[in-house]
Length: 157
Image 1 (cartoon, rainbow, N blue to C red):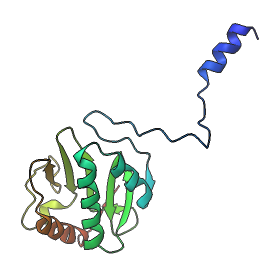
Image 2 (cartoon, helix red, strand yellow; image 1 turned 90 degrees about the vertical axis):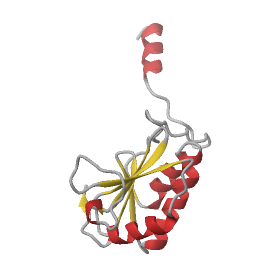
Image 3 (tube, helix red, strand yellow; image 1 turned 45 degrees about the vertical axis):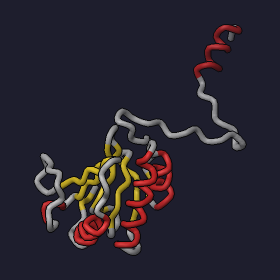
Image 4 (tube, rainbow, N blue to C red; image 1 turned 135 degrees about the vertical axis):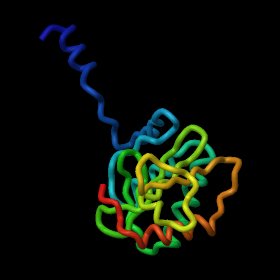
């Protein structure tokens, strides 16, 4: 192989980071949603929360704590770059996603919750709660929705 071909082959091959190098920060997708690899358990969810930009990270920690307190033993995963929460294997009652100006909480069977979460969806059963930086979160209402949602059949995804 000539020196030029060898140099091109070496340049095209991605370099693996050494164990002593710090991990690169997660990429933020359009709208500011962290790109986190699919995974099950608390670890990928905590990685997602830590990567949420600005004020959203603190709100993400608070939402996660409220969900854990409301649904002891809740199952967690990151799928499609969004934390998911459920009570049964691979079924989910709630998901979180970052957008530029707000955090969207999706209740997958939200049409069955009382009172209804305010955000409508094109999907018949889904309802949303948008959380904005300058608007206080009604934690009691959020926990009531989480409790109700966790008692409904989960969404297989």
